[in-house]
Length: 75
Image (cartoon, rainbow, N blue to C red; front, side):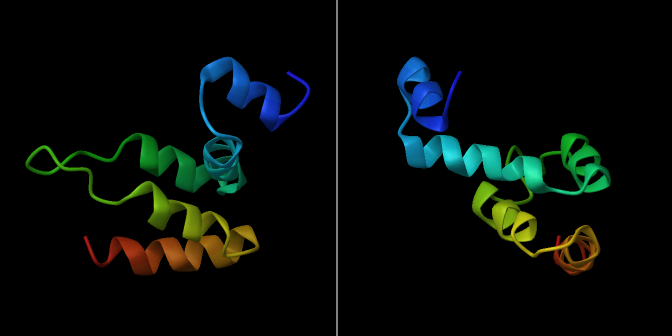
């Protein structure tokens, strides 16, 4: 695929949605791994994608890790 717009078109998503999903690739690898192994509690996910994107946008991986530690303390 040449662009997020191409991906969106192929999948039937909006370009904005594809951008949101691609933003998750910015997460530090260790955070990505932890997220993969999170368990749902009473059938509910422990955090929303929006919150996770905010962590991804924290800046450096170290800043992301700090925000991730703060977030984990809340669930």
